[in-house]
Length: 194
Image (cartoon, rainbow, N blue to C red):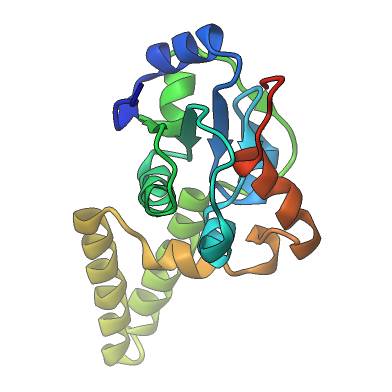
């Protein structure tokens, strides 16, 4: 039975309660996942899915719920996985943030800042440097304008080039030796369920 393209927190919780084979796959960076995650979820970062795109195929027909901070990266993951033969995919609308707003439980640990927060820090720092620097070198205000244009484009297209660049930093990347195990949480047949 196909799943809707998105599901709210209540429907995802019902799915997880009613189907022990349903998988909750968090596509955020490992640092974000370590800092805060939905209980029972598995981390399979979007950058890993992109890198291994040609070798990803399902060995199951279990329902898969994709999760990220707000839903944008999970939507990208859904598109990639649909192209690779996954048929029972849905995205948690509102992501981990929406999950928490509905009072659903999260596990907290130690980890890096959420990607959105990293983007705000870098973008804000560049804009501030451009504005302050333009007091001495007037053309630096163009730097602030460039970042503003990039953020506008990001909002209109629901993509983020800066987040994509930040995901390449070492602390946001998946160690290569972890990749097979992480991908197995998504692709392997798990007859026993979660």
